[in-house]
Length: 234
Image (cartoon, rainbow, N blue to C red; front, side, top):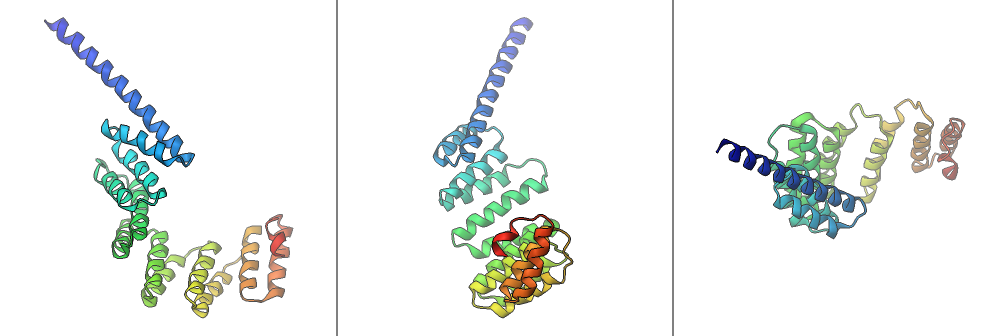
């Protein structure tokens, strides 16, 4: 009797192992399809994995991305929400990543307030500056200039990424608030350039300000530092 039970347990373990292998294969195929932008194929593969209740947080995340790329926002929202709900252990990095996707899906679905709430939750987790920028962007789109400025100022605090300052400037340009946007260009120019890429971005900023002599100097410095992307703008 004992031997029969032991044999039965071994058979069941083997079957479970095969099942996990098949589900892992389906997950891999889904990720490969997602990378190739074959979203329908990815969805079919991920649904197989979900039915097998395998790697649910990661699978629902990938499943949501496929729906997001297809602009099927309710399906994406449901998938990202389930990804978060299926988490059994704390993983702040993964949770933040899914919440960013969920906020994007909610914004695209016209749920601005819920997206802002998600960015607030991310900020409560670890004060990620990207969340300040993205939430500020939603406030600006709502013409809530006061809260937008507060979030943008927090986003650029201790930030050395010229692109962030330029992106904020361009958001204000799109709202016909050029003078408000120029404030961020001036803040960016207060940083000390260290690389050829830094000088290139300074050249871009001077170009936006129509200060072409300063733009030329910055772009020449960029080329001297072997940053060849500066050549077309120069």
